[in-house]
Length: 102
Image (tube, rainbow, N blue to C red; front, side):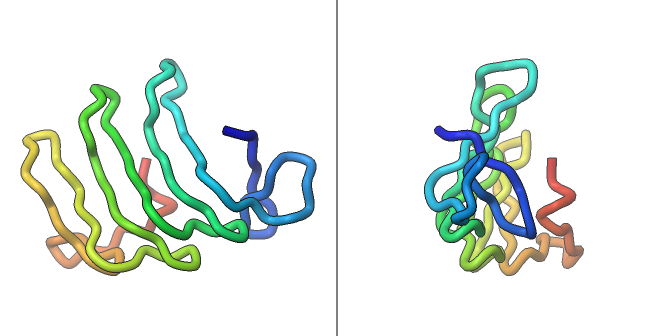
């Protein structure tokens, strides 16, 4: 995986002017464990998104299209029961923007 950075609302390879296309891997700060893996196209999330708990169990998955969440997203709570949502809305009808998830 290559180093990337955010500029002007898009992801770029460090030192390049063309928006990034490919896979981005996020790791936990204190570990080599993968926290998130997602696809980018032309600098925006586009395609599969996967997230794991620090324990290594899957936490959340879904897809993006042109930088926005699309379709059904599933969040697996620590109790392992799926919590399904679509179009960025949680099962309880509350909205949680992507930027606030950590």
